[in-house]
Length: 301
Ligand code: GDP
Ligand code: CA
Image (cartoon, rainbow, N blue to C red; front, side):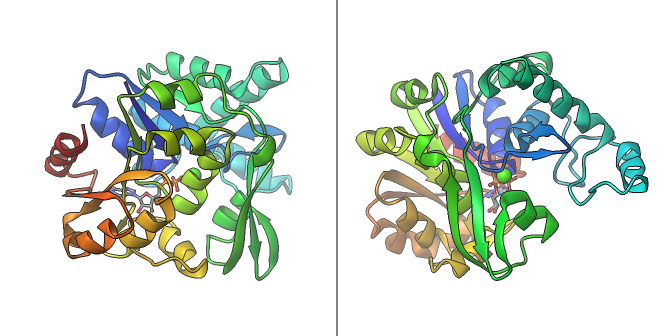
């Protein structure tokens, strides 16, 4: 079994590509720091992104949500004067209605995730890292913001001074999370945002400790040539004083990292990455290129 630490889209692409190339069981341990409540509905963006990708129903053009989506409910909500900055499509809403109903009835986030993925034919096991509250928060120039306020409402364009994870010190790992991390033949860190997708996972009791004990986790750099393919990873790293490239990512993960995978385009950084204390693998890391995925999976599988 291979355990993969997951944010949203970067992880979804990795899991989808990997699944096609292995018969080994894959278990995704998924960030919940982005989870939010809107209109009384419980929304888990990273779990849903991965689920939609793995069931082949994701919206490639938008980069989030479901394919063939429509927006009639949002139009109606706007007419009523409701808040519509966080867009929820008509089809996507069914996921949040289902989850919210089940949580109200006493089910855990883990149980609801199992139900939704089974219904949609997802064969990879997805586990929220915790069933407890864990909320990513931002201190910014314009005050304190929740994850979705920062990311969606302000389109991640407000300078960030600090990031923290509310509730993390009391968040227990969800059932099966630490066992998966201990028992896995390999632990892989997806090319997800280090500061807002991977860090919250590490804050959950026991996760960082298991990774440190193993010392062999393999991380794929989400930065290529010093840039994020999508989203604010590069910008946040700059604002929080990290070196904005694969070296900065490796240094950030150094206390528990075994191997860093960097892109061919970053081959010149090999020895600097190695100097942070990990092994270095240079491979193709563009996950929408099948030849690069073949090479990547061969290198770390
Ligand atoms: P989110 O939760 O949907 O914002 O996504 P993640 O945190 O999982 O991933 C965002 C990061 O994934 C960005 O920093 C991207 O650079 C990275 N990413 C997305 N696709 C790829 C890819 O094909 N290759 C690599 N190396 N990184 C990727
Ligand atoms: Ca996310």
